[in-house]
Image (cartoon, rainbow over the protein chains, first blue to last red):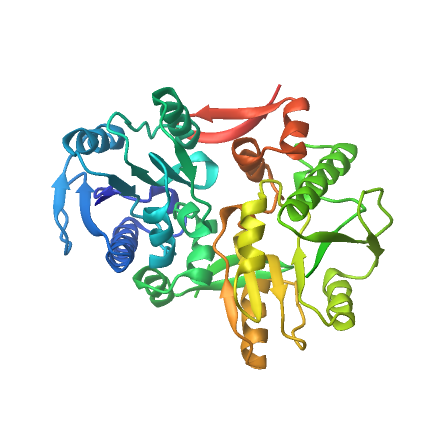
Length: 203
Length: 203
């Protein structure tokens, strides 16, 4: 199974602008990508990075500067075997979660992200195409239904947690064990528990 | 296995105050509780409600108005068999997720909630006691480690999603299929997709 990891190589993670400057966002995004590639390999996959610009990473890189939906659909169109698409900011993903994803039965397997996204996907139906804009989880279910393709939904907190916001950094500090978590720790981030609520603070 | 479902019977879900009034929060919390009880039963469990005040529900009710930690620890102390503790606001939980929880090996099985909570727990070690304040996921791992108890972490988006805030209502509309989702729909809530972000709006 091909495993494609889309990566926004330029100005990634803008919603972390309140806590990380542009260079830091680049470095943190690169650390998350490395963690995802590691987990994919450990789960038995052979990852390829689908990047909006050339990136220096120890994996094959396909450069495609079009919107995510177009770039992924080109891969789906060009491939006869099953394809997995795993987003690059799953900083707490473990190989176990990806094994569950790869092993799940279904013409289309969807791991929803928080707030309606599609964080990971396995496509085994030749005519399925993605549409990542908006509530893509709902749209991908509809697209599969219209094709008569069977759908499985993978229930995983790790796969649901794409890291976009300050609140997501709590998850990385609590559950991560790779480069992204270490990057945050080295940058001075730690958990802050106040009044029963959990947040991050930076030393 | 005993399955205890703690329930704040008085003034629940205050963080939903921006979108629901007090009576609505009562009704929505009661709908979520019913959904959780249904899922527990369908997963083979026999739920008991551990409530801060008497509630009218089709299950045995233990009333204990002390803080959650004390009330749960009393149950653990009084019980020789394994005990599961499943919070009452898991509006998108399915029986499948609870079967995975109940079947997971470990002296202590923890399903983390978003932001460091402990949304579901199986306790098979006689000396394990809970501490729900703050980052309880981290604290429960530490408590287990200090006892020499084995820990399993259950990776589930459904169990990670306790419904506290407006953003969580997105998850209920997308993934729920029980009374809580229906309550939201009847109250006029629907998904609002704008600029690629997904939110809720009320008609």
